[in-house]
Image (tube, rainbow, N blue to C red; front, side, top):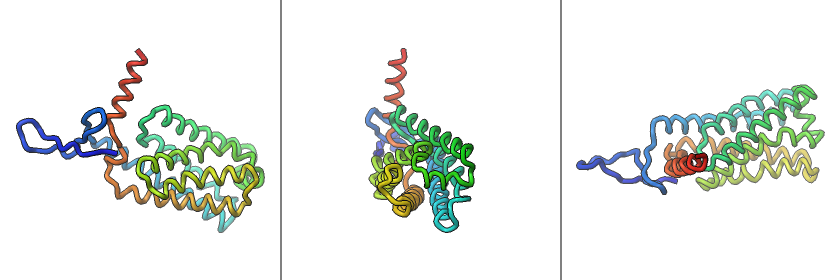
Length: 224
């Protein structure tokens, strides 16, 4: 996503290590950028760990207390969406809106049927998936972004498996065991994706900041 600008200070032979050449000019990766990337990766890891743990507990002990993992999973995803770098602001805001709607839906289900039975209710009555579905749609959006930018196979798996599982459950075309298998696979792929990101250069996650600046200037000009 980025390329080293190989630029030099005027009159010297000292290269600026954190400077890159973008589509719309040069930009630098700042310490704040690196901290945002680190926070994004940790938030994504939290989401992956808790998603996997929740499904694991459901499979081993049943759904009664598996809902406990939904809270840190939603927090992790929300924080990841706060620090993720997406060029198109409307798309970024759409994912955040889906996250908020999914969290609200989860709260409404918990208030309606109780926390202990909310997951078993969703399992028994697929229509409730519409309430919590936006949360997983936001997670799917993160997976799509990661595949679009980096082409990671685990990201495309995550992007395809979650909507397939939810639509299969809603339509009744898939049994509970198949849906759980797809969701478990998606959770494990998310965990792999999150862990592999820690070996990447922070500049890759930041992307081409010149595009961000260009789009921000365009929006500012249109607002005048």
